[in-house]
Image 1 (cartoon, rainbow, N blue to C red):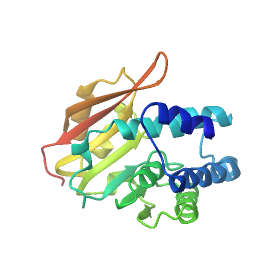
Image 2: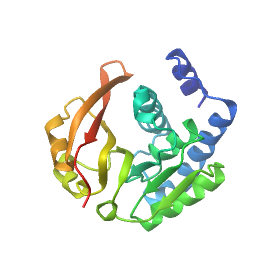
Image 3: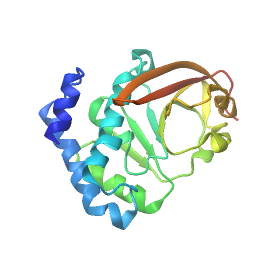
Image 4: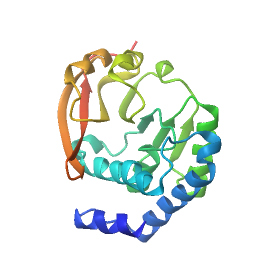
Length: 209
């Protein structure tokens, strides 16, 4: 993973030795349990580093500071899967309480194991369907929901809640209306030359029911 650290450093993203070790532990667990739990469709280690770890780290770094406030807010990773971006966020934000929401029992078991092995004591794993959640104020989601099924999220958020979605540049902001949100900000980053990525940050102005 040394090449990844160097690439990130060149973009002014610097990780501590502990953070690097935590991500290595996750990578090793992913390689060991990935096939059994069907955690990722990618099998090439280089592609996993680029399309999962690098993408998450760049995207989280691109989030505006306002999204991280107030500091007491609990963050939810909706449809966490193998922990992208939730476990990566927990490594970057060790003081933040983070809830990983994953309905698959196999994947949630992996998340429990990974959080323990990585020493992420601020992480809680919730094996529950997203449509049954209520009152969320801050959430992340990456490749878990297509715009066509955003509607299952529409009752999950409280007023003035914020959701950061990892999306392609083809994302249509109007689709946030299905979540009872409007677009607040687009945060762009470059995964590699000719591969632009972005996060769409939506804000809710309704109430959950």
